[in-house]
Length: 323
Image (cartoon, rainbow, N blue to C red):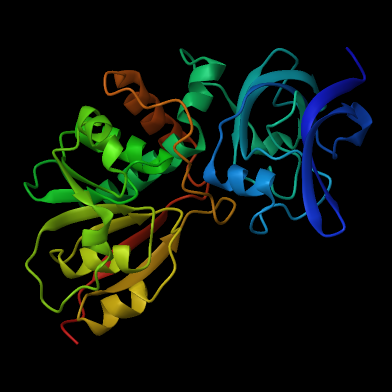
C-alpha cells in the first residue's frame, strides 16, 4: 500500500480558506483505530459551504471535507472490524473537526462506523447518503408521534427540491401519504411530481407570516427551512401534529411568530449525533421515483443507527390554547 493518497484538502492562509487536490501522507491523518479506503462520499449543502469557505463549517485546519463516506477497511486495531469489511459513516463531526470523505483514505474511530447492510453497494449507500438518512429519520419521527397514511390530510415538505426534501417527498409518497411539496424552483415541479408530490406550492406561500386560528390543513410536516416557513404550517395544522425539522437554513422570527399567533408550543427532542447536520444540496444524483429499495434501505438504516447523523429535530406539538 502506498504511503500517500489524494485528498481535497482545505487549508487556511491569511484568514482565507483555500481548497485544492493534494498528495497527502498517511501519517498526516488524525488518530483512529480503523483505516478506510474511501469509495464514495455525497455532496451536501454543508460540504458546499466548507469547500467555498463560507460559514464556519470547518473547525480545524488542514482538513479534508466530506461529512459522510462509504468504503473498505484496510487496517484495523479494533476487534469490531477487519481488513476487507465494507463500512459506512455519517456525522460525528467528520468533515468539520475530523478529516472526512473527500479523500481516498480516512482514519476513523471504530465506534463511528457501521457495517454496510447486506444487499446494498457502497455507491448506493452514498446515493442515499446523509440526506436520505436524515429524511428517513424525520419520517420515522413523524410516525412515532402518531402520523399514519390513514390520515387524509396533507403532509407538507418544505425545501422539497433539496436533498433531504426530495427524498422525504419520495419516501412519504411511497408510504401513501398525501404529500404537498413546497419549493421556489419552478423548473423542478415536474421532478417533484414524479417523486410523488400530489400538489406543489411556491415557498412564498408558506413564507408569509401565519394568522391566528387558520383552518386546519396539515397532518404533519418535514421542514428543512425554518423561520416563517416553519411558522406558517404550525398555524394551519390540527393539534396535536408532528413536525420533523432538518437544516433550518432560513433565519427570521418564525418561532416567535408561531407562538404569538396562537399556535401550539413545541417540546423538542433532538437526536444524539453531531449537531447541525445539513439540508443536502440538490447537486447530487437525483432521487428515482421508481427505486423502491431506497425507501426500504433508508428505513432500515435509520432504525438500525438512530441518531448517527443528528439531522432531524423531533418536535411534538402540545396544545396550549390560542394566545
